Image (cartoon, rainbow over the protein chains, first blue to last red):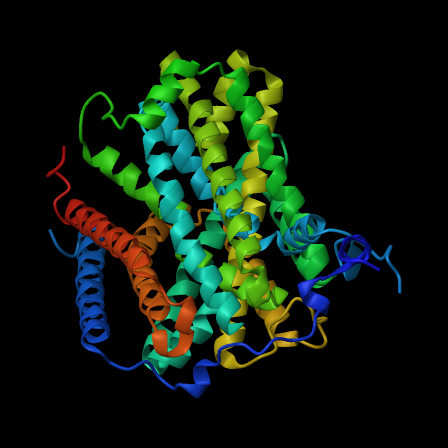
Length: 70
Length: 429
């Protein structure tokens, strides 16, 4: 059988992901928690500040609507 | 060996690499379309039709900008989901610790639950206009939503949901019969312009609402969990990217069609209240078909949204609590996962049926909370995708980071604008 015949006769198997053999994935537990590099630390700090400010704003607006503040 | 097994379920042999790619794509197709189109939920129908009714075609350009933004966000989720096989909530918990994990889970559950209430409120509103009592429409839809998920396994659920997504093609028919003027549509899509009246607080609120509805936090959690549940493989990455891209384009086109339907209100000088009222008012101009189609499409949007949002909550909770959390298992095998899903739907539906329930306050609350948590959800996603220690070649490239940080900065600015507008409502009027 020459190469062309082998190519023509070649079958490609297609398997649905749900029925395929399980793959080895990247495991977050093997590396533990994220390293607190400068960028990670600053990002989380900015996020904390942002959330605190937004919660204060939300409470302020709620108190205004409820008539507790004017 | 059986070659004629169910084409899109188990496996088959094909003769060429082309057909291998086509069949693999069709097997992988689903999570991307569903996450994008489910985002055109009841809140989105309201936002887009309102945008069209109040500003005509002047905000179409916003959708063109949101298309790559929503694709980039979801593409990161695809990479993370395929690389780790874990859901988003699980990743935040494992990489950032208990405090951030619980915070992310708590605010996701809160926003999702409030959104569920608005979805059932929309079903109630739409079907009331068709003469069906909320005491029939809401429980019936809740039971149907529960049945679809608990009764058949992942593949059956996915196929039914894809069909529901494709029903939104009807919006294109409605946009076509509204005769919007191709030249205006093309110009306003490509060239950003401000509506008449310039920048007002209403316009800013609406733009923030549109952005918040197009890039919703639950989408990040949903698609990653769905990919993990479907067990997508590394070799499926390019197909899932294509699935996500197709979903993004379809969703933006449907959103544009919704704006064009709302545009009829604008051109006729009619006052807009909500999509159900719009459907009734447009009947004399577009016909009874259009009225019924809008009302039923509102229901379809709410059903899709409810299903996706509830599943994102159940998956996230199951991931963090360590329960079995997969649609591939029956109720008896994953009881807590299904119980959470059923409980959320039942409770949300019940609240809508309470007489004088503060639905308008809940709708406003959802908008505010979504604006609060979207930047935090995106920041976690960005940090996770830059985790070279874990992800290696799947981590973000430099150009990914440039685009993503621009998106994050813009979202923060918009959230601050929203906050300022809340504190100083007269600033933009």
